[in-house]
Image (cartoon, rainbow, N blue to C red; front, side, top):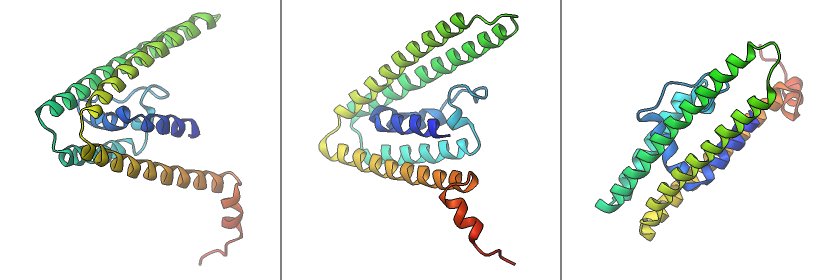
Length: 192
Protein backbone atom coordinates (compact mmCIF):
# COMPACT_ATOMS: atom_id res chain seq x y z
CA UNK A 1 0.00 0.00 0.00
CA UNK A 2 2.79 2.44 0.89
CA UNK A 3 4.54 1.86 -2.44
CA UNK A 4 1.36 2.71 -4.30
CA UNK A 5 1.04 6.00 -2.44
CA UNK A 6 4.69 6.89 -3.05
CA UNK A 7 4.15 6.28 -6.75
CA UNK A 8 0.92 8.27 -6.74
CA UNK A 9 2.57 11.12 -4.88
CA UNK A 10 5.52 11.20 -7.27
CA UNK A 11 3.17 11.23 -10.23
CA UNK A 12 1.11 14.00 -8.71
CA UNK A 13 4.12 16.25 -8.29
CA UNK A 14 4.71 16.24 -12.02
CA UNK A 15 2.28 18.84 -13.30
CA UNK A 16 1.88 17.11 -16.60
CA UNK A 17 0.81 13.83 -15.08
CA UNK A 18 -1.38 15.45 -12.47
CA UNK A 19 -3.21 17.51 -15.03
CA UNK A 20 -3.94 14.70 -17.39
CA UNK A 21 -3.72 11.24 -15.94
CA UNK A 22 -7.13 11.28 -14.32
CA UNK A 23 -8.72 12.92 -17.32
CA UNK A 24 -7.42 10.30 -19.72
CA UNK A 25 -8.19 7.49 -17.30
CA UNK A 26 -11.88 8.22 -17.57
CA UNK A 27 -11.89 9.02 -21.29
CA UNK A 28 -11.31 6.07 -23.62
CA UNK A 29 -9.71 4.14 -20.76
CA UNK A 30 -8.61 0.60 -21.52
CA UNK A 31 -10.09 -2.18 -19.43
CA UNK A 32 -8.78 -2.72 -15.94
CA UNK A 33 -5.34 -4.34 -15.90
CA UNK A 34 -4.65 -7.78 -14.48
CA UNK A 35 -3.96 -7.91 -10.73
CA UNK A 36 -0.54 -6.55 -9.96
CA UNK A 37 -0.38 -4.94 -13.38
CA UNK A 38 -0.23 -1.29 -14.40
CA UNK A 39 -2.88 1.06 -13.15
CA UNK A 40 -3.62 -1.12 -10.17
CA UNK A 41 -4.15 1.98 -8.05
CA UNK A 42 -6.97 3.13 -10.28
CA UNK A 43 -8.30 -0.35 -10.99
CA UNK A 44 -8.68 -1.51 -7.41
CA UNK A 45 -11.61 -1.10 -5.05
CA UNK A 46 -12.80 2.49 -5.17
CA UNK A 47 -10.58 3.21 -8.17
CA UNK A 48 -13.46 4.08 -10.46
CA UNK A 49 -14.88 6.55 -7.93
CA UNK A 50 -11.47 8.18 -7.69
CA UNK A 51 -11.20 8.35 -11.49
CA UNK A 52 -14.62 9.95 -11.75
CA UNK A 53 -13.81 12.43 -8.98
CA UNK A 54 -10.53 13.34 -10.63
CA UNK A 55 -12.18 13.68 -14.05
CA UNK A 56 -14.72 16.05 -12.52
CA UNK A 57 -11.88 18.10 -11.03
CA UNK A 58 -10.14 18.16 -14.41
CA UNK A 59 -13.30 19.26 -16.20
CA UNK A 60 -13.78 22.04 -13.64
CA UNK A 61 -10.18 23.16 -14.03
CA UNK A 62 -10.49 23.08 -17.82
CA UNK A 63 -13.57 25.30 -17.64
CA UNK A 64 -11.91 27.73 -15.18
CA UNK A 65 -8.87 28.20 -17.40
CA UNK A 66 -10.88 29.77 -20.26
CA UNK A 67 -8.34 28.64 -22.83
CA UNK A 68 -7.80 30.44 -26.09
CA UNK A 69 -7.70 28.45 -29.35
CA UNK A 70 -3.94 27.84 -29.25
CA UNK A 71 -4.03 26.75 -25.61
CA UNK A 72 -6.99 24.46 -26.28
CA UNK A 73 -5.04 22.85 -29.10
CA UNK A 74 -2.12 22.21 -26.72
CA UNK A 75 -4.55 20.79 -24.10
CA UNK A 76 -5.99 18.40 -26.68
CA UNK A 77 -2.52 17.43 -27.92
CA UNK A 78 -1.46 16.66 -24.36
CA UNK A 79 -4.62 14.61 -23.76
CA UNK A 80 -4.17 12.68 -27.00
CA UNK A 81 -0.49 12.04 -26.24
CA UNK A 82 -1.32 10.86 -22.76
CA UNK A 83 -4.17 8.61 -23.88
CA UNK A 84 -2.04 6.97 -26.55
CA UNK A 85 0.90 6.52 -24.19
CA UNK A 86 -1.35 5.16 -21.45
CA UNK A 87 -2.77 2.64 -23.91
CA UNK A 88 0.74 1.68 -25.08
CA UNK A 89 1.89 1.21 -21.48
CA UNK A 90 -1.16 -0.90 -20.68
CA UNK A 91 -0.53 -3.12 -23.71
CA UNK A 92 3.17 -3.47 -22.83
CA UNK A 93 2.32 -4.45 -19.25
CA UNK A 94 -0.25 -6.96 -20.45
CA UNK A 95 2.28 -8.43 -22.90
CA UNK A 96 4.87 -8.70 -20.12
CA UNK A 97 2.29 -10.32 -17.83
CA UNK A 98 1.45 -12.88 -20.53
CA UNK A 99 5.15 -13.50 -21.19
CA UNK A 100 5.78 -14.11 -17.47
CA UNK A 101 2.81 -16.46 -17.30
CA UNK A 102 4.21 -18.55 -20.15
CA UNK A 103 7.67 -18.58 -18.53
CA UNK A 104 6.16 -19.89 -15.29
CA UNK A 105 5.34 -23.14 -17.07
CA UNK A 106 9.01 -23.89 -17.65
CA UNK A 107 10.60 -26.32 -15.19
CA UNK A 108 13.52 -23.92 -14.63
CA UNK A 109 12.72 -20.24 -14.63
CA UNK A 110 14.90 -18.01 -16.78
CA UNK A 111 15.27 -15.16 -14.32
CA UNK A 112 17.67 -13.34 -16.63
CA UNK A 113 15.09 -13.26 -19.43
CA UNK A 114 12.40 -12.16 -16.98
CA UNK A 115 14.63 -9.39 -15.68
CA UNK A 116 15.58 -8.25 -19.19
CA UNK A 117 11.93 -8.14 -20.27
CA UNK A 118 11.01 -6.15 -17.19
CA UNK A 119 13.88 -3.69 -17.72
CA UNK A 120 12.89 -3.21 -21.36
CA UNK A 121 9.30 -2.45 -20.35
CA UNK A 122 10.48 -0.01 -17.65
CA UNK A 123 12.61 1.84 -20.22
CA UNK A 124 9.68 2.07 -22.63
CA UNK A 125 7.39 3.27 -19.83
CA UNK A 126 9.91 5.92 -18.84
CA UNK A 127 10.11 7.19 -22.41
CA UNK A 128 6.31 7.32 -22.72
CA UNK A 129 5.97 9.12 -19.38
CA UNK A 130 8.53 11.67 -20.52
CA UNK A 131 6.61 12.26 -23.77
CA UNK A 132 3.41 12.78 -21.79
CA UNK A 133 5.14 15.11 -19.35
CA UNK A 134 6.60 17.11 -22.24
CA UNK A 135 3.17 17.53 -23.84
CA UNK A 136 1.65 18.75 -20.55
CA UNK A 137 4.55 21.07 -19.86
CA UNK A 138 4.12 22.58 -23.36
CA UNK A 139 0.50 23.24 -22.44
CA UNK A 140 1.38 24.66 -19.02
CA UNK A 141 4.09 26.92 -20.45
CA UNK A 142 1.54 28.44 -22.86
CA UNK A 143 -0.68 29.62 -19.99
CA UNK A 144 -0.67 33.18 -18.73
CA UNK A 145 0.14 33.94 -15.08
CA UNK A 146 -3.52 34.01 -14.03
CA UNK A 147 -4.10 30.58 -15.59
CA UNK A 148 -0.92 29.20 -13.99
CA UNK A 149 -2.17 30.50 -10.63
CA UNK A 150 -5.45 28.65 -11.20
CA UNK A 151 -3.58 25.44 -12.04
CA UNK A 152 -1.25 25.91 -9.05
CA UNK A 153 -4.19 26.39 -6.68
CA UNK A 154 -5.88 23.26 -8.01
CA UNK A 155 -2.68 21.26 -7.63
CA UNK A 156 -2.12 22.49 -4.07
CA UNK A 157 -5.65 21.38 -3.15
CA UNK A 158 -4.98 18.03 -4.82
CA UNK A 159 -1.71 17.60 -2.89
CA UNK A 160 -3.51 18.43 0.37
CA UNK A 161 -6.22 15.84 -0.32
CA UNK A 162 -3.54 13.26 -1.12
CA UNK A 163 -1.70 13.98 2.13
CA UNK A 164 -4.95 13.74 4.10
CA UNK A 165 -5.83 10.47 2.41
CA UNK A 166 -2.37 9.03 3.02
CA UNK A 167 -2.55 10.09 6.68
CA UNK A 168 -5.94 8.37 7.09
CA UNK A 169 -4.59 5.22 5.44
CA UNK A 170 -1.60 5.17 7.80
CA UNK A 171 -3.93 5.56 10.78
CA UNK A 172 -6.10 2.67 9.58
CA UNK A 173 -3.06 0.53 8.95
CA UNK A 174 -1.71 1.30 12.43
CA UNK A 175 -5.00 0.35 14.07
CA UNK A 176 -5.06 -2.97 12.25
CA UNK A 177 -1.40 -3.82 12.84
CA UNK A 178 -0.79 -2.95 16.48
CA UNK A 179 0.35 0.62 15.84
CA UNK A 180 -0.44 3.64 18.00
CA UNK A 181 -4.06 3.65 16.90
CA UNK A 182 -4.49 0.01 17.94
CA UNK A 183 -3.66 0.68 21.60
CA UNK A 184 -6.19 3.48 21.88
CA UNK A 185 -8.82 1.40 20.09
CA UNK A 186 -8.17 -1.56 22.42
CA UNK A 187 -8.38 0.58 25.57
CA UNK A 188 -11.57 2.36 24.50
CA UNK A 189 -14.65 1.21 26.39
CA UNK A 190 -16.89 -1.17 24.50
CA UNK A 191 -20.15 0.33 23.27
CA UNK A 192 -23.30 -1.51 24.25
